[in-house]
Image (cartoon, rainbow, N blue to C red; front, side, top):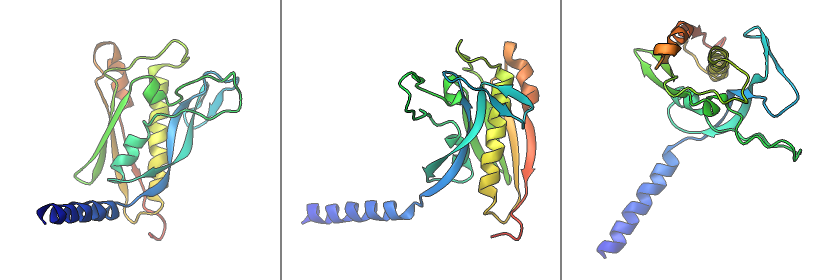
Length: 187
């Protein structure tokens, strides 16, 4: 009898836990490497033509919003192809270059940290660390702008560059603050 009651309790608990989380399909912008292709991306938002681009992809997410949106920007990305000559196993520059992201709400500000402590740019990636971080900040901004379309309050964002020591110290000046306005008329 005790086993049956315990089984019912845990089954009910997991059913409630499963129902309690909401899954949303959202566009996540990512800094994507175009290495292994024959094109360059015109990234007009940062004023350069690079072998990289900021593009969205749909993701089904659950968790804390907008914090988990920031984490999703760094998710692995294998680009599907119909060409057997395209053998790139990873396209997300944050994954390729070991840049970590964290975010938390602090006093009504989304505090985002881009951790460059382990930053390492492989030889086949023809980009600088500054270019990669600018693309990342653009991806962050675009992702949060999409999210903000359905919100009724302004979102303040503070981006910090963490781990910028010694040879990476010049990257600190890429830290920025910006505000994304509420959707016109709210939701």
